[in-house]
Length: 222
Ligand code: SF4
Image 1: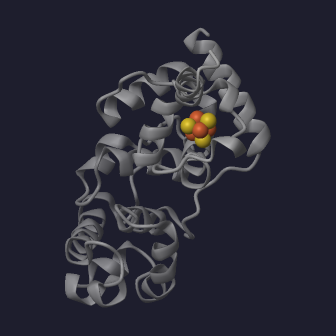
Image 2 (image 1 turned 120 degrees about the vertical axis):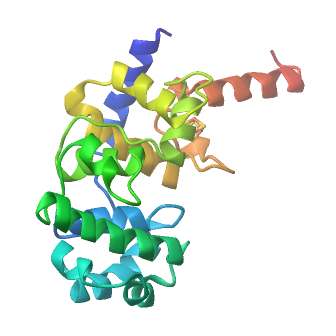
């Protein structure tokens, strides 16, 4: 199958299977989404959603959080992964938002990446989710699932995966495609045990079809 055909068919199937695909993080503003995304690094959205209601109630916006110390924030986020460095990043990020951006989250990748605790993936999530811009954040799920399906081949870095996906998915579908790949990786194409028997794209998947083939060869029926 030609690569672009695989993309077209996979996105059509996902569109049918997941007509509504959005982030599972809870937030009420771009600032709160940014805080939640920083907290979600190496941590589950479920865990982040458990700590953010109290955090956002105490520090609802950049001005309020900029007045807090990292220790103040740590009390609210101690149960997420890497709480010490994340509390420092959040305090510094809020201060820079206030000092350099008038307390408003910037809507472009370059400015976003200037903020403490914000790397390319987080900046892309903000662009795609908060500002509905054509961006493809690549996390561990997107990286793994794209490779298994055959949307990328032997991609070595998230940046390589991002570039390949951006080159093949129409700009207006990128943001939703990012959610499709994450949700598919979280609930179906899981890292250790992909649920291929319940997968809506198994007939299009390179990983599944090559393991099926090798199983048949080992079983002697090919
Ligand atoms: S067929 Fe299996 S490996 Fe392929 S995308 Fe579906 S769950 Fe993942």
